[in-house]
Image 1: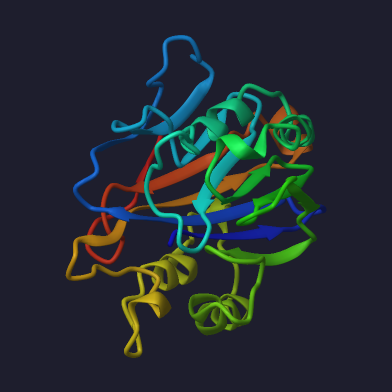
Image 2: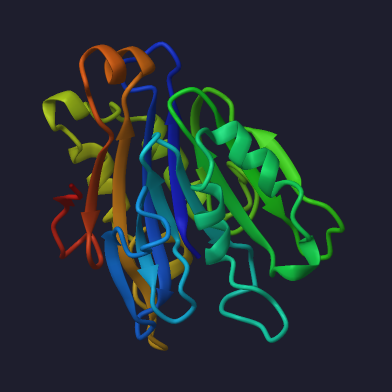
Length: 250
């Protein structure tokens, strides 16, 4: 069960801040974010070496996309396309609204259920393909704090959201300008499972499923990007963030 936390502040110089933990079988091979696709030189993303797609990426116009499995749908399934392809498809578009509209029209029978976040410095969208659904659910992500796992946005019935959303709401947000990420970095690295690994943000189970990497990302406002040449900031931990440091992706 992956986790994405997103903070939207339209009038701020950093209108979008995002944290993402990837939870996967730890033996599944992958590579850190880079320009892995010669036919997509504008895309910076992690590479899932098994299926060829990605779990999170950013393009040169500042669109970020993340995908999460829905509950009970871990891994590939015969006859279904890889959900990691959808992130790359989203990043083919110049803005989040165009990307979300395009993916809203995909054939839902081709994929296993998923949650997807697509955002830029102006808009943010949540796409959900629920189990048994005949059409995509597409919803604008509101201003403020949202948390996604394998169920619904800010779902109080999800143990991780119930445990950690109040903690994110109760601390100061990151200050990317000053390089201050400690509050959010500490929460996404938390291994406090309170008896259940589904409550921990970073974990590893006996069967080898756990947190394989983590990202902290901030997008500058349109004004800051154009007038002051500010670029997105992406910090990446190439392993569980409780033991592996974040380094900038350049």
